[in-house]
Image (cartoon, rainbow, N blue to C red; front, side, top):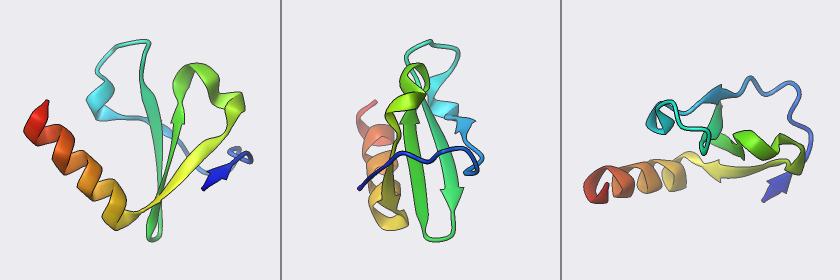
Length: 64
């Protein structure tokens, strides 16, 4: 689900992004995580339920 109002979510740079300019920012909320592109914040963000986000992170850890 794409959302556009990102002002009050408290985004932080993902620890998996290191110091790269090509990174994402994450806002952890009760039961969900919001994710947005650091270079294109004006495009909004995507919301993932915690189970989906945890699955993605686990997959990246095992293949990255």
